Image (cartoon, rainbow, N blue to C red):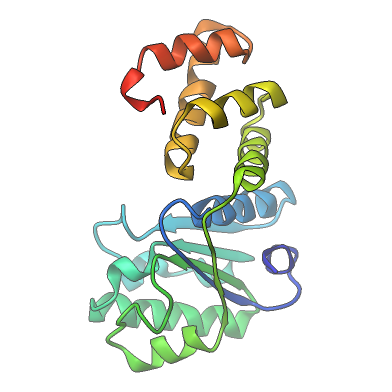
Length: 206
C-alpha cells in the first residue's frame, strides 16, 4: 500500500496509526527517501518537533510528489494548524501529490476540531499498525541501515534483538548511534563492537 503512494500510483492519501514503536516513522522516512532516490521531490516533517505549523510554512508543499507528515494527531485541536493542513490537503489532492501521514490515534480518535479535516482523513486509506515481531524488527533494522548507507550484518542484528530493548524507537536510536560511532572510530559493525557500545550504556541492555 505504501509502495503505491511512493510510486505515484494507487491511493493518494494514506493515514497510518498505531502505538509508539510500530514503525510509523520508519515507513514515512523510507517513503521520503525512496522518492528522493528517484530524483523526485518529497518533504517530511514531524508535528511533534514543530513549534508551530502556519500556512506560510506550507506554501509550495503541495507541489511535492510526496508529503510525509508524522505525529499528525499531536496538533489536533489547534484550529489554525488544522485549517492550514486542510488547505494543504486540498491543494495536494488537486495537484495529484501523495499525502502520507501518521499518528498514534486514527482519524476517529484524534479529536480534530475541524470536521472537514477529520472527515477527509477518515475517508482516506486508514491503516492500523501493530507492534512488529522479531522478523519485522529484523527487516526494519536492515532496511534503515541500508538507507543510511552502512552494512549491518545478520549476526549483529540477531545479537541486538537478543540483548537490547525491543521497541523500534530504542532500536532505531541505537542504530543511529552505531552509525555515528563507526564513523568516529573507523570500526566495522561487529558483535565485539556492539558489545563495547552496549557496555557504555548498561541501563539499556535487556
